[in-house]
Length: 588
Image 1 (cartoon, rainbow, N blue to C red):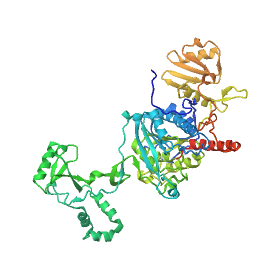
Image 2: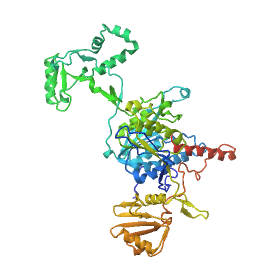
Image 3: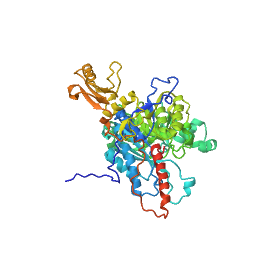
Image 4: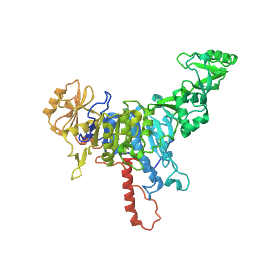
């Protein structure tokens, strides 16, 4: 019987790219760090990578698999505008394949307790949920968060039908059994059920006197009546009352009925006593917990339990839900000092994702960097980060934004909330060109742009070795274990050279020798494994493939209603190019 599973299928799902694990080349002229240390915990080894995001993710896999604690991505939304003349099913299929390829690498990069947030609109929401369920497992879906990003106003408010104000965040973890979520609270309005105040809180609890909250407030202001308070504070009255409640949270209370079965035996005795001796507060002591207080058969509940310190300010707080409607930013266009119309996300949104899923020092990844919001927020929150971006705004937007963050010049976004003063730094990388290229006769040869150092690092990555050249031993270019090494050279090695290598390596160690050619019997040297470059890697990857943003050359055209077939190809080509650049740049 054929084993079956529930899955989403689409055109081209079985086609998977054979990605080349490229090396990353640092550009020291664009790497950046602060002029001095701000603290001992400053982070410098962050990475900004310029290049195709799928190739960049593959390039990171060798060194960072299982290490990324949080991934936030804001991929381009499939708005059905890029493929106007293609069949709808094909359009969905292309988008899903592009997402599947990236999400599978992201899954491997994540730590076992890592979290993923995918920002998406409702065009592909249902499809993407099914895809993520397949990759991560439905049991590892944490939540579908509704993010209110705008209000029903402006030009869109006059459109027919429903006004779109929300996007969504799909929240997944790699392994829920290993995942420990952080508890996050958000500010909320004053709870007016707490309508009483303990007038003499410093007295023994049995002598406490309860008065109305308004009366307690009036006494603190020397006002005679509530009407006097309304006249003095007008529309600021609620704000002043809230300030009073927060400043006196340990003595602002409400009463609540409690059933004897819902408390322990000691508390039941105090509860019963409060029914007999009315008007007097009775206490039940609890070890390691807040004590119970009862009066007139009801429990006293203190406002202090409803307060939290959020961004350095004590406020009324409630647990975070899956509706995020409190992050609208009136100054979003000014955040980071860069303009990114219709794409920039508020720093407070990324901050919330990182608060849920990380702590200081954890590694954060965004492979659709956009304007660099994720990197800016991660840096301010003292998380390590990796950003990937292919568009020109990697240099025009992301790079200057992150430099301002490092220098402490960015006062926008979450800067004040987290107390950011500057510091740390980052390294700027670009993807190396493909290791192999075709010569004029169509033969695959090592790319002329590769020097010996680049070649050695690239072969190490392809063979699964850690690139770690040793100055004491010329043949130690990398290692896979304490006694297993690799040597990469463009030379043709003869029998004498191979024998010398074998003798120096010794029988207690093994060496993979990658060379252009060799002469002699390869079986003569039991501690050497001989492979030829480039033959050894020819079938490993798709060489000289630099753009994985889109591939629609073989997709079928849908039937067109237009009578002008000659005008279609140019328009389609233009739209495909637009989608290609969008997919690597992302919406953020």
